[in-house]
Image (cartoon, rainbow, N blue to C red):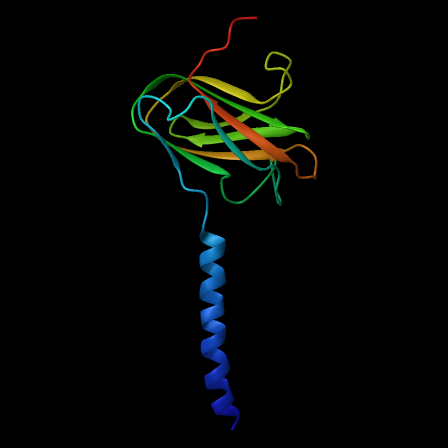
Length: 146
């Protein structure tokens, strides 16, 4: 009798585990950039911070966004705006960079310049343990010099 019940429970548990695992593994699709952006600026929203303590603040285990650069870009700028103290960790073909807010960028983490082809994982971190909504702006327009 107990074996018969186990045959009912185990398949249900396996199906539930499979469904939950697929939901967890699902993430935002990568943004592909060839020569120009489909719209400029391209805006991505999310939540900063996470459970992983890093040298770039508190981040999530998986990137908030992945950018696929298909060909060299002479200029691309990423800017994060948030109510908290956001950071931007970029892990790409040229290395790993942690960007903090500074007075030059108006108190927002900002990274700009030449981008080589490849995949870039973006983590929007938070210096405090809190989490905040953020807006990530991706643009090919250069800002005027200050």
